[in-house]
Every structure is written in C-alpha cells, then in structure tokens.
Length: 548
Image 1 (cartoon, rainbow, N blue to C red):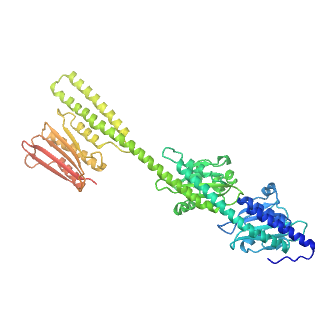
Image 2 (tube, one colour):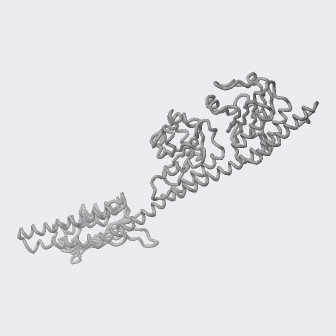
Image 3 (cartoon, one colour):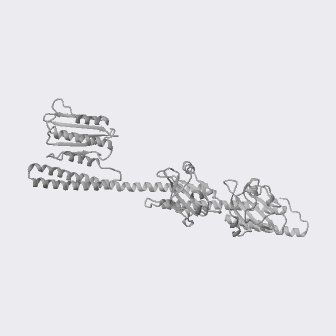
C-alpha cells in the first residue's frame, strides 16, 4: 500500500481520523467470534470508513465459485424482502470472484458484466469492490456503493478498505472455522441422540430420525422416506416441521435417477428447488434441500430430506459430511435395534418351543395312546350303546388333541408350519382307525428340525403304504413304527423310517405296486428301501434317505 501524500493540515487530520476508525474497526472485529456478527461489523465499518450509503459482504462458498452468504447494510429488511432472492455471484458481483482484484466504478450499471438491478432495488452508481483474502485464498468480497455527497470512491478509499479487508479476512476465517467446529459439535450431539433414542421397543424410528435432525440450527423442515417398489416414488414415513404446512407423510414423486444415484454412491446431494415434488405450498417456503441416504446393513434403505427457509443461504459445506455421519449413526442404531428385536424374539420363540414340546411330548402322545386303547375296547362288546359311547369318548379325545395342536401352532413363530411329529402321529391314527390294536410309535432325533417339506411329504406317503401293507396283507396284530433323524458328528444327516409288524411275512416272490412306489420315492431322494421278512418273524420295512 503506497503512503498517503498529505498536502494540507485538513488532509492530515482526515487521514488520522480514518486511521483511528480503521484501528477501532479492526479491534472490534477481532474481539468477536460469531461469523454473522463479524460480517455485519465489517460491512458497517467499511461503509463508515469511506462514507458509503450501501454496503454488502459476500462470503464465497468453499464448494464452488458462488456466494453462500450475503450481508447487507443500508437497506431495511422490508426493502430486502421486496427485492427477492439474495445474490449468489452473477454479474459485477461475480467479477471479483473470477478476478479477485480491487475495482472502482463510476457507474455500476454501465459495466459490461452488469446484469442490471432487480425490481424494487434502489439506484446505485459509484462502486468499490475489494476481495477478502486469507493465505492467498479469496474467502469473500466487500461491495460498497453510493458514496455520500456524490462523486466516486477515491484511491485512498480503496486503500482503507483493502487494509480493513486484510484484517477482516483473518477474523472471518477464524469465525468460519469456529462456526464449522460448533456446527460439527451440534451434528455430533444430534447423532448421539438419535443413536440413543432408537431402540427395539420404539416403532417410530423414522420420526425420531427426522425430529432429531431438526435440532441442528438453520434446518426448518425434515422428512424420512423409503422408496416404492418401482423406485419411482418416495414414501414419507415421517415429517418434521409441519408448521410450515404442505407435504405430510405419504407418497411424493422424486426422479428415479436421483434415488438410484443416492443409494448407489451413498453420498448426499443438494436440490436447489424442491417445489416439483414437495408441492407449491411447501416448496415456495423452502430453499435448497439436502438429501442424505440412510443405508443400514439389513432392511430397506431410507432417505433423510432437510430443508432450509427460502432466502437464508445455501447449504453449509460442513453439513454435507456431517449429515452423512448423522445418517450413519441412525443406520447403525437401526441395525442394532433390529438385532435386539431378533434376540428378544428368539428368547420368546425358544420359550414357546419348549412349551410346545412339553405339550406335544407329554400330553398329546398320552392322549393319542389313550384314544387308540379306547378304540381297542370295541372288540369286547358289540352292543350299540357301548359302541356309541366309545365313539363319543374318542371324539372328545380327538377334539382335545385338535385344540392342543391349535395351541401349539399359536406358540410357534409365524410361518413355522405344522410339526412333522404331529403329522406322523395323525397319519398313524388315520391309517389304523378301525384296527383293534394300537401301533407303537417312537421318534428319535430332531424330527421337527432339519427335515425339508418335500422329504416330509415322501415320508408320510411311505408310512401310509407300509402301515396299509401290514394291516391288509400281513394280518399283523402288532406294529412298531420308528422315525429317526441321524445327525452323528462327521457323518451326513439322514432320515430313517422303520415299520416292523408280527404278521405272516412275505412268502416267495412278492411284487407290489406299493413297495415299488416306496422304493421309487427313496431313489428320487437319493436313498434306499430295505425289506426283511420270514415266517414267524414278520416284516421289517426300512426306508432311509439323506438330509441336506
């Protein structure tokens, strides 16, 4: 900066006055840590130093060549509101962003880069613009117009503002760092809060995510949505900031490329205007929207949408990263809550399984045996009243068994299906309904465990065939049924059905379509059928298949 040349005492007094004002402004700025207050102080001090009627300071965004904040002095809030959206760096204002050097103009409107003034904007002619630098990087620009008393801004005015801008640059940068640090802390507090609030016992997780995000200052509206099946629409599960009106929880249109990009890259994006899918009522009140994906390891991916009030500036650069941190905390909390619910459900299901096993093993089988024994009493009396009474008692036992089965099924997890052991007992009962003796049924291993539905169907069909052969052809008076699941260590698992009767056995060459069917079912499953028979020894049918 060239030294001032003082030609008369009045110039000297004026120079000393300006230096004192400059020093006072620098000291005042250095004592402040609030970015908003510092920006306003810098503009006010610059206007005072050079007698400017209007002044403004535009903060250049770290994310691109545009202004992310714009502070004005000299106009009322009513005037600012009538003018409309704040400048973002077009025209002459953008000249200092593209070519950061001090510039003075006699008539602002006649410059080649001028865009003209928007409606309701006061007339401005003389102009002085000075960049604000820190370590060689431009972080903002000072804009001063309309020197009081007429005339243009002088070279001395320019030097004063350059000196002020040098001090302001350090203060603005420190305040910006302080503000970013403070904002990170606010996001981290919200992240910790959302992680603590989401639990397995609270179903309104989307509402918690939306409302906790609104605790970060400057965000006025929030929503959490999930994609539709065709990924062309977004279902809003929760909305915060309802006082703004407009969109409630429900379906909204969101272009599919935006959704696919969000979930493919798992990075936030900014929409400058959300009127197209939020509607006119709400979209007119909101400015840029920050869209951040929520990507848990399990379950559907979600989307956090945050909106600022229109004309309050762009989305801060720090919010891009910190909203991702926030949504990561939310996703981890969702995974944790889902895991906790699964563990709690597992405890309940295990307890229900234990109760169901006790009912089945200790109660139903005894009732089933009692029913078979009751049926065998028919041979001791042909009197119709006795037969009717036996039928009535057997029917009561069947109803009791059916009700117990219903109770057992209600204790099982949804979709667990009917127990195979129950189906085996029911098949035996139905097959020997009119036989005057009760087959003995034994089950070993995890019969209700690893047997696939297809194998179970073949097993029941073979059981029916084996029982029918023993009753009709062998003329047996006793039948033993054994179903075993083998799961020895180091050996492949298998399922074995053995039906042994005390009948007359198979004499000579015996060909039966039933036996052929049983063998074919074994072969289809990669197993085998074995027959052992002889006079006085009855018949043993052993059907064995591997389990996956």
